[in-house]
Image (cartoon, rainbow, N blue to C red; front, side, top):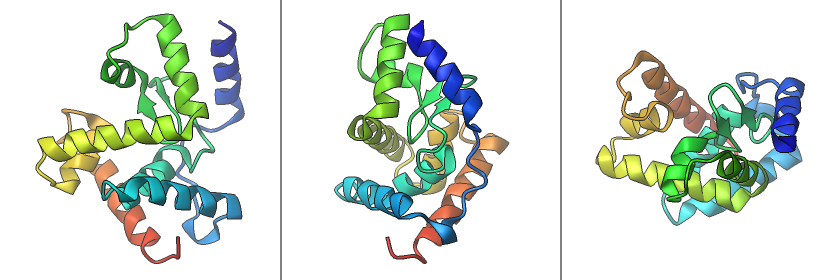
Length: 165
């Protein structure tokens, strides 16, 4: 219950949308976060996808909690998806445990995002438009919202390629 209250307070303190992110005016901390993400994603060829998703989903960590959608962390992983991926029972305790890890453990959050992208990459046979759509919309990757999300990720990647990260 205490964790839930903390999460709710954090939600109200921060905005849950990262649409105001300015890629041309990155802080030193944001640049360092991007470099960390890039390093982690290189082995899987996912650096730019991960960086773009982190920007889109959480503003590089500014907005780590979305209670409405039950998405948490740098990459806004859906808690039920994470619980299923870890073969854990869906209990209040596990939801709080995994939500906390997604918020506080960069390695854990990044591994989950990589696992999610690799899963959709196999399903969609490297069709990145569909991979990014599915990251957001799951099996509803043809929905208007998921397609728009994919376009936004592609646009962020184009901008990221213009800067030295």
